[in-house]
Every structure is written in structure tokens, then in C-alpha cells.
Length: 133
Image (cartoon, rainbow, N blue to C red; front, side):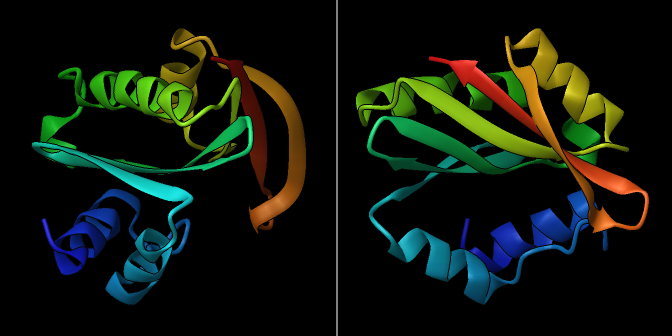
């Protein structure tokens, strides 16, 4: 899938909240050796590792393929890739109004580590989560 295809899927998944990433932004992210892309049919994940920490930057699964294990598979690959790159723990941010994503992360062993008030929009906080790898 090209950067344009990834950007199109990101738009389909997130609409305008949070703002979807453009193909140019995705290309810029993937140009860094710190960042990595995981792709499966109907989804992708972009992560980053710096020293012994990983960050899940975005996870997108096409709406018609949700609740079929695609996100769980990407999360497993994220953990394995992050560990292979030397990470011992991982972090992510999720919108406070995104209950399905929060449920996925909690089921995968993530715990809430903080909160950024009104990060995505007024009344929509970023929930910071962490997981030991």
C-alpha cells in the first residue's frame, strides 16, 4: 500500500477527528529510521522506537474489517517489532471518546498513565497509556 493508500485508509478510519494524516506526512514519518510501518490486509500501524521506548503513533483498520482480529494482530506485531528494536516499554495516546480503541488497548495489557486535557478538541482529552513489553 502506497503512502496515498495509507492516507486514504487513515481518513476512512478517523474522518476529521483526530485530523487524518496526509500522504506527505506519512512519507515524512517513514523516512526516519526510528519509525516503522506494519501492514496487514485492511490495516496498518506506524510505530517508533527510541532507545528502550516504543510509541504507537497510529493504528488504522478499515471499518468493514473491524472486530475480526486485525488490530490485535497489528498490536502483537508492534510488540514483537518494538522488542526486536530494543524497546522495554511502550506508550500511546488515544482519544477519550474512542471507547473501542481504549477497550482494545486495555485487553492488550496497556494501562492508563496520564491524561492531556482537551488535546484533540475541547472536551476530548488524550489518554496516555503504557505497557511493559
